Amino acid sequence: MSLPTSLAAGAGPESAARAVLAIHGGAGTLRRAAMSAEAEALYRKALSLILEDGARRLEAGENALEVVVEAVRQLEECELFNAGKGAVYTADERHELDASVMDGRDRRAGAVAGVTRLRNPVLAAREVMAHSGHVLMIGRAAEHFALGQGVEMVAPEWFGTPQRLQQLRHAQEAALGQVLDHDGQAAAGPLDEKTKFGTVGAVALDAHGHLAAATSTGGMTNKRPGRVGDSPIPGAGCYADDRSVAVSCTGTGESFIRAVAAHEVAALVRIGGLSLEDACRRVLFEELPQVGGDGGLIAVDRHGHVHLGFNTEGMYRGSVRPGQAPFVGIYANE
Ligand code: ASP
Image 1 (spheres, rainbow, N blue to C red):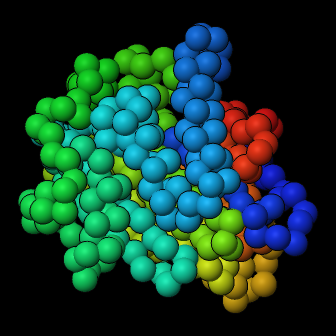
Image 2 (image 1 turned 90 degrees about the vertical axis):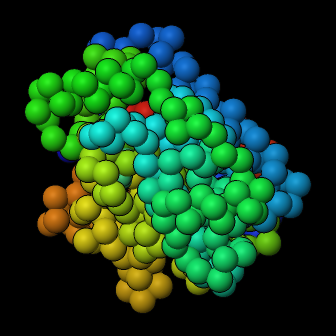
């Protein structure tokens, strides 16, 4: 089992010095040997560019919510990851997307589930939070609401890629059931696409001392139509509370829901008095395994500590502080 990567925050009394953004693009099993340097470089470059943009935004004083929403929107636009464009297929060859956002200032949250035509589900989740009076909206009605708020619609086919379709075919032919992310024969990422969780997410502490989190996913290849995982569930796949932490998860959604994984980290920090690292490790290595949970999470606490952890072999991940070069990792021990 691999150890999670942990980064300590730079010391400094000012919130501005502690501002930080972390992102993930899914966790899974390594296929390092089969990986070309070019493919690995693609993933690293995509993550670096998004982090650099986020660092500039934090430096300019943007609030954490804006920064995480924009980081996740960019991850959704990137076909390498299973969210937005490049999302996986359901068993009946469609895409059903889930996303959520949470603002640590007042614990307002917004989410959409099972949407099929919203180009950037994370933008719809933000609109649900800001303008619907609700927390979670689903399907056609969520799309209709988001459209009214100016969120861009696309044809349902827009999300698909030939690689994702091949992945579905493979899962169905091999009778694999519900598969966590892409088919390894169909894509050449550094993580084994048969066992990778491709959800994307971001967490941030801004220069004003506020926390936020956002998560977005296409779910799992060959999932039943109507299945919803942890990603749009506040407390499960996404959580933010200025009193403690912001967390975004990736992994076997059903297990993360049962473990209430993101909130469990927050509770262990706020009520249990654990350090961020100890809380994350406990959830990843003690709580989640009890309910069959494989995957990872990224978290930042109100002091600016960051933890990028996983109980799989690797996770696409990175973090950055304004004015510093981003850290990007895929494998354990990076
Ligand atoms: N957690 C996501 C889900 O269950 C899958 C993932 O992380 O890739 O929908």
